[in-house]
Image 1 (tube, rainbow, N blue to C red):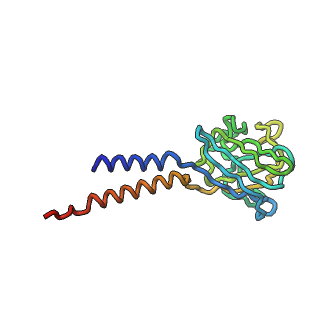
Image 2: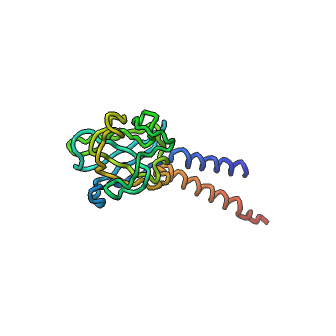
Image 3: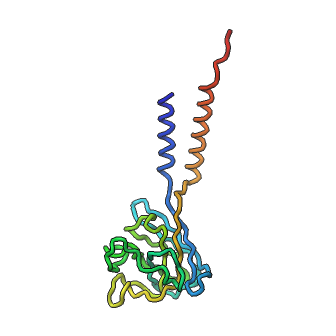
Length: 201
């Protein structure tokens, strides 16, 4: 009996830990009004490390590249200025892009194709938990991943912004169904074990 319980607990732990995928979808708003919803950006942890950002933004940005950063404060007010500076927990004080050793909030540029922004980008140094309680900001101009000739990549005005809320792990439906079937089997087995033996006298 003890061996069966141990096996069941092990299987449950594997089902719970293995397939869970951390992700979060952030609503993005126009900073000019603060209320016009422009679309979403979905954040998902990569299996090998890093976070994938998948935008689904409408016809809102000029064609070309746009600076994209995680900012310190979970606040998009005052035209995006309330978001504060780039997320920089190590206090590096430098802007070197997603592959560099500067701000952890330096994200890959987003590209607008005919006004729409749909191409995913990956920030290799981040975990999703780094972004909880931060703001995602999209800038008017591009980003050269440097503080020269202009600070912070030269992105300019903050056109769009969204706040990242804390998310819970998501279990795929197949894994959830397998877990429920296993738990049901454990309950049935326990009831059979607890049932009194038939009276054969």
